[in-house]
Image 1 (cartoon, rainbow, N blue to C red):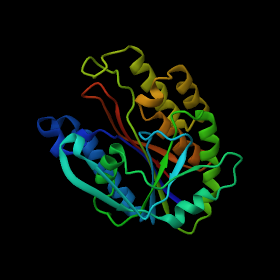
Image 2 (image 1 turned 90 degrees about the vertical axis):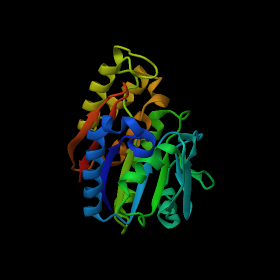
Image 3 (image 1 turned 180 degrees about the vertical axis):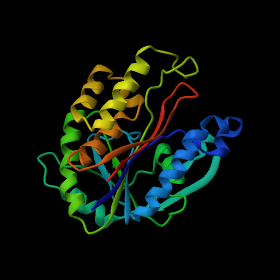
Image 4 (image 1 turned 45 degrees about the vertical axis):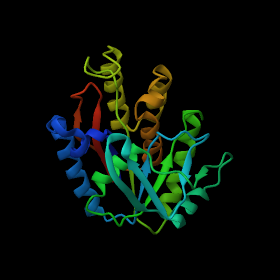
Length: 258
């Protein structure tokens, strides 16, 4: 059954060893993630589905491995990260009967966004297995939404307690501090995105992916869409923990209380 669903920011600056002198700039997000981690611990999930759209796959895919590894060496952190997977649960999710089947990823290391999110959210629960759900940059978002929605019945029928987190940022153009500079549409996009997420309005989120096509790779929109599609028909309430943009990129921490 599904017991937890949340949106988590992905910036490596959430990690003190990377943020260094900028550590205090994301104090709101760090506090929010600690609260979210406590909430997840209360729900005692048997596995956590992690949705991140960094890796390019031809169609939305599910990770099937017993052990997932990755590193943040590109950010100067030498730690090798390691989490257990759950092949059994991943295979059950893959068994969802669809005209276009999900892809299966078996060899890929974890992307840096997933590592950042998991290092915080599962800090007190390193034994919880993870199952990556990887959206595609090339497959139509509407098709991925339909496929994700089909996962809902499968996930809710499982005896295991599943958590879901979607990893990603919002607009990358909220101020001149942003690496890509300021764009007036950045704040507009985030306003519409937050409304769509709060209301679980899949259609609105799909429209945003068409109006702002560059956001498919730049933001976490492709990660947010599968999560919302999976829980769209469930009774949930929206809780916003934090939203801040000290570097011109939006960092959102929120939960759909189930």
